Amino acid sequence: MEIIDISQELFSSVVFPGDTPPTPRRVMSISNGDAVNLTDVTMCAHNSTHIDAPCHFIDGGASVEQLDLHRFVGTADVITVFGVADAETLSHLIPLDCKRLLIRGADYITPDGARLIVEQGILLVGVEAQSVGDPKAPRETHIILLSSNVGILEGLRLKNAPDGRYFLSAAPINMGGSDGAPCRAVLISDITTDITL
Image 1 (cartoon, rainbow, N blue to C red):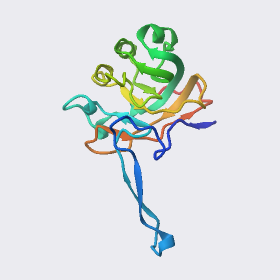
Image 2: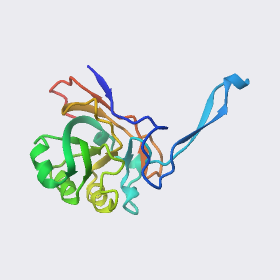
Image 3: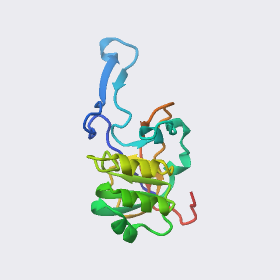
Image 4: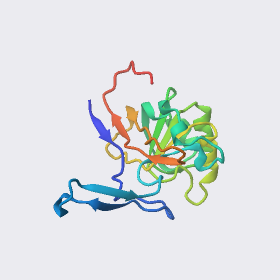
């Protein structure tokens, strides 16, 4: 069994334009005579590798603590897309029994690509970009996915995970009322074929 970390390191992570960057502040230090080292962190809930909750784009939608964690833990397929992930491209690459889809290399998922993901009953989609949708017009793709309860996982780093099937663990931090939350996303290789999550 191999565990592959597919998360960004928080403080050096890519920050979506306009978001508050993650910033640490040491408030206690053993070297200064304090009993412990203690750090405060200021950040946006959508920094680094993170999930989007429906209320990020849908007023009154579910927040992070209301999400079904089954969407974020279970078998996942890694695929590679060059350019945009539209319906035509994805239709040739998504395995028939795919439950969670992680896309390497795509610039973003188009609205018709998002509709195909919904139609195929996929529980979660993850991308390496900081936005699953077009950064210049992200709303439509997000709405299509989130209104159908498709989990969104953004800011992945898939360079060490060749295309194929894995076991994914990417549960968000339990942040009550939040529209997003960071997670430590990992893939486990060499899974047995009888895992059905």
